[in-house]
Amino acid sequence: MDCVFCKIAKKEAPAEIAYEDDQFVVFPDIRPKAPLHLLLIPKKHIPTLQEAQESDTELMGRLLLTAQKVGRLKHLKGYKLQMSVGREGGQEIDHLHLHLLAQ
Image (tube, rainbow, N blue to C red; front, side):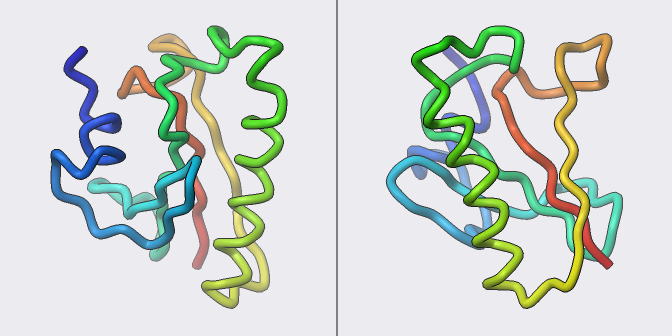
């Protein structure tokens, strides 16, 4: 597998890590669409939301709570969360990820 997000999670590719815990890594998007544009990725490789399983329910819930935690750590009063699903939905990297965008 040649997944750039997996490489970042394994520290095999460089990224400015904004937050990390046992299940997630958060880092800036290389093509930001807002003054603050972070990507939240699970360390577990899941290509798209369409491929998430029932066994990923807790992980998916923790993804949203991780976004909340990052928002608090960054002292954000508001932000937008966005997830693209599949190429037709605008997903460019085949590793599930959540965009956190803020002014």
